[in-house]
Length: 502
Image (cartoon, rainbow, N blue to C red; front, side, top):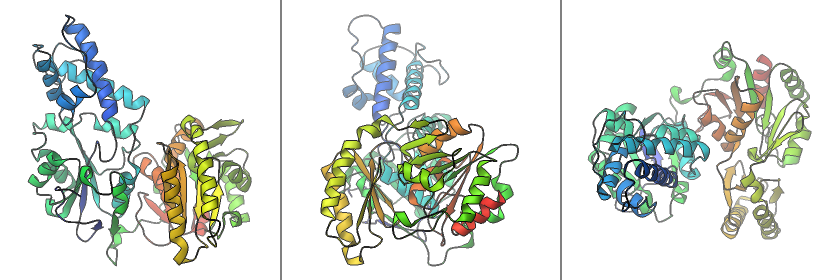
């Protein structure tokens, strides 16, 4: 994977690594377009205020961004831009107001514009990279995000990743502690210091040789450069696996939610409950049609719905989910959150997802034809999702299902794959998932309530990671496995017991 990598390692062993560090932009998410647009708006306005004379060309989002902005702290980028236009202004101070006649005034104007942009339009996230980060955290490996940008916190928050990392180091720290930018090792060293992990027990994902040289100078020898990966970025992240020791330390096993009910409920705040369906309220069955709520589970859900706001967030089709639950006062999010319905006929579907319906139609036709002769394969269409189930496919034929799903993705644009328990699902390729649906519902159902989310699948991790600092994630699993949830229940029987305690 390029010269930045010292060894062809795609297995990250917990016994070998205590931390993995990620360069932020270009590795975990793509904020360059937002940054370039923010600089264009800020610089052109700055010129109009302080250098209105003819001859000063406006900001070019390609040439100026590449030559003066990319890979540099805000203030350094501002200085280069002013020098390139032969505009003589003082450097100023870090607390200069936006558009003040100084390099810092320009830098802070660009920063303010960036915050507005990412709040309005969250930057695209590289889902395979984020999935690996969540897996690492769930395995007890510390993770950090490192960036030269001064507003990485706002960018991560807009992307729904604010609570994911144990540490974050960015341009604000660079200025505050008078550190040097890449290729100096300062940013990486500060991240290691905050994680309290030695460089020899760490690895890093970088973008380009400048970041790689800086990481090596910090003592990090296991590196992966996304710009030189044969599999391509972000597909390279799907090649990685995380290996836990044969015997997990007791500290790695999540506490039981049954034993921590008083800790889970937030004193002085109402509670809002979010529930997955399959594997959480019912057991995993051979086919989706076999999963039904037990009478005792139905009774406790009805009782809870009278006492607190309740929402069901599932991969099932919306109408199917509503029919199986049958609570008129509840909120529902089907198709992994793309199809939402609430009381009083309230509904919501992201416009971008609606535009992907023709792509799902084409993929459905392709998969049905391709898998017609694979015994046990089941193609299930929901409005905004297409599932290829292989629970009843013989082990020797499973590769046919996976190859068909990959072929459908390559044939049809605008879709992405999500992997669950014995199922591959094709979904609209956009920054929307169960976690985003939970946030949307929460703002309308119970904006001030303490959210509790209970789920069992990889798709529920998107919700768990968003509740790191404001809510509680509870994973349903019979054996410890990677997760960003804070508590654990073993099976739907324990879920029933926990809900009864609520």
